[in-house]
Length: 148
Image (cartoon, rainbow, N blue to C red; front, side, top):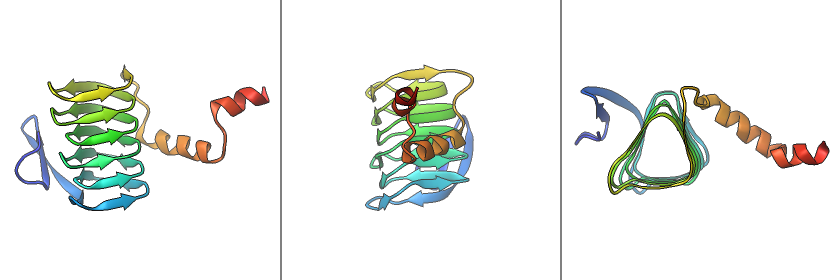
């Protein structure tokens, strides 16, 4: 899971090098998008999108949606989560939002409040950005129904 070295992630006997780290006590306002593995130990007020892994440390908080290939949550997420691979919510993790993942592990003691969809066809990382643009343009399912 999360090893002593905050710049690497060990799962299933492999280590992944973390390319982006948001340190403890740091507050990031806006959407965070990376192409490599990201570790968040601070607070992100916005969406977090990674093409690889996303690790949310025990002190980490995300107030927005999270999307990545593999995700490890040991902090708090207030938003929806989309994982193309494996989503792990560790015992200290708290998720308030809906989950979409191929594989899901929730440790004893973890908190999850929302709906869970497990499928082989999880929405891709890029589609979350597309839905944000649609919402910003004022096009929602409700507005589509009103026009019909």
